[in-house]
Image 1: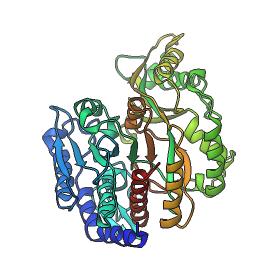
Image 2: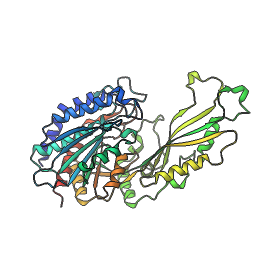
Image 3: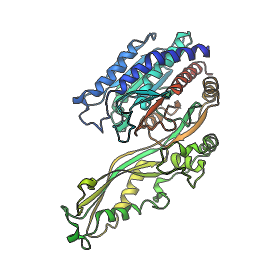
Image 4: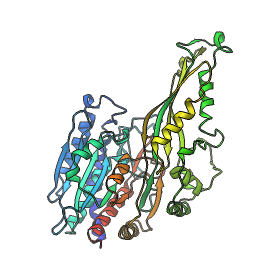
Length: 473
């Protein structure tokens, strides 16, 4: 590969074609099915996948076949099949993955920004879904084109872009079964939906946490009553709920209490975390929009990284039964419900974790109250297999060439259900899980952005890995 030609080609395509199309894509409010149950009626998902398909069809990729695959009542999948170069083994497949569904709007966007309005400033493309994960289709196909432009051989490539990832990928297993003959047994999986520790290096995600979500509800009345008449007689549903939370979480430290939520951290992952902490230093916590000035966590950057990637955590992400302040009269509330999101260590058994949490919350129920914990979803995490020497060398070469610094490895606190599915189905595959979700990019939250220069460099790095994959020993 002539790396200067690769960078020039990739940069030009990003500037002239990808950024304009991605900007149009950001305008489409194609929220994931769990956030928009009427997605078929609204038609936004169809508009988004059709836009991606149209762009792909304009790309002069040799032998490419494109199809929007559909299963009734499920979000469609964009499938792109590109045969390998002359002499390539057709059974040696590279699977490149991404998704095109989006998180909901959320609140708190800056005055000049909006989730469905693309805005470019300071080298960043703002708007919902650009970095998470609209760019994946463009980046995958551009990396393959970069090789073909120079006549560099590559393996048989299958690009799979789903529309249900932000809902837990509940549609995806049906497509994996339907397309199993076309996907084959990949020797390399490239996922462009992950984080990067900074915008200065090529980052590879080595693990993903699992996710357990559910609703904890405490009921004390069938309807609200005057708080003056009831208080002192009827217990507060909020107080009881608060007490129940103490069964599973130390409210002073945030440490979760059930043993079933913990695993031993592999030595290699600890070593990788040490190196990542040495590079990232205080940026591990400073990348977030803190309400306090100059936050100083008690834990070291290393401990914070391990907390975020290999230890269980709890976030309360929603509530019901609590009126908005403008409607909050002097009423004893009949019930309080919390939406709870547990992040589980990569190798933790999600079913065992769910059972342990449910048992702790529902055992010895407080008198005068009904208590229930209903599990919405329990998804396992993913821990990458040992990385092959050729991939280690390739990532280092790519990062040195296109970023000017060595490649880095770290776990990620989020969840990509597809990785766990693939890890089980293809235990011999190598994984390059990477992405653009770096400091302050704020996927899922307000002011989400895509770091344009990193997107270009990452695309070139993927091209380098595809070349090295074909020529590996």
